[in-house]
Length: 339
Image (cartoon, rainbow, N blue to C red; front, side, top):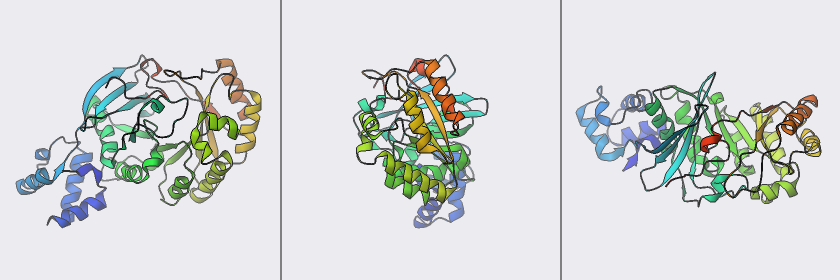
């Protein structure tokens, strides 16, 4: 059966017309799914029994089961979800002063092979559908009885490698008649799939684009991120400049600092040269140790020195707060453990 959460509102209206229903019924069902977060069609009490039966015969609500839940000392929570086909994904809930943020996965496994990411150790199986992406958010809200205000596509998988489903999921999450999270509270991270960055610029979605940069020379970046062999730093930075010009949106650059690798002052100087004049922000990430990983975290002193150099030379930089590292829920640590 079809997952009803795979449809954005306009698509759902067309589905309903095809089964002989009025479009406004689709709006009612959409609200039940996303505003009320129901777990069965029987809970949709303002639609007819006949329509509820029709829905049960043709669609599923795709309700995830939690295989395992862990909580870090800082309150970060990680969920291992059964995606109902024998596979599993990880999702992370983080609490900040401004509310709850969720880090969602977009694929089961990852093709990118970044050397500092635990997802590299997972065989790529398939991309998640729009509904499977959105259900991560709904499942966490049901479990914790909270309202999530920010969504980051930084979990397992490369979001822009699952382009259509990720963009559709954003449209569902952003819809005012559904989950209603503002586009500026949604971030998409990419390792640098240049053609998809150009495509995203045309979507007219005011979300935040985060670029996993992590190095300032092609030689170093290629050793860390094989995607650089296809789309080098020059091509990536040009795509980012064009994205900013097209959308007038600030880009966030992610830079994971690894000891004796990409954390020296020469790297800082090259980073300033690459980004100077762009509407951007640099997130400096103390690299997280992963199983069989060859990189180790730069010293706190070096991280602060790196940040200060960027700020002093006109590139806004902050150090990302480390959350969930004691349960392997921090940046680069997700890998579907215990399945």
